[in-house]
Length: 167
Image 1 (cartoon, rainbow, N blue to C red):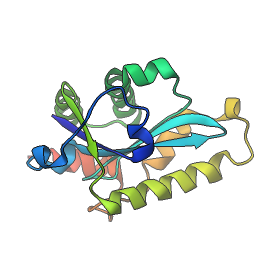
Image 2 (cartoon, helix red, strand yellow):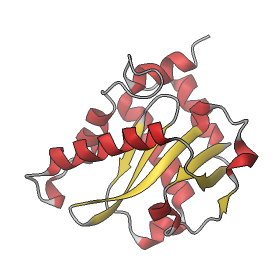
Image 3 (tube, rainbow, N blue to C red):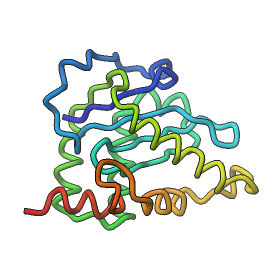
């Protein structure tokens, strides 16, 4: 199971119900994410961040129909992100397997929201002199996952995800 704490802005766009956070307290942090609706160059974008590792994904220019199938958009985009970042296959499998059921709740972790605000500021800085069409989503997502964040803030998100699933 995947639990996504949606900000109020995102809740207004969701086609899925926002569920009670208390029902998901036992879900491990690696399967808990926060998501916010942000704007980049006037376009609606989704910023998703893992509570445990700080791994993040920015989806640029989402259209109305994508919000209607947001679960599938997130699953497919995470799969692409894991390939881009060279996430260990076992780690990717476990995380993607958990996306079979996604529950949206209210946000719960101010620290993660703060980290998301840092990434949003970084995005704004990276695209400042670009037109929307010039933004390289691959470079943006790759670069944003090189910054140590989260409870394991001494290592980058990719290393944190891979270490989490080491046995």
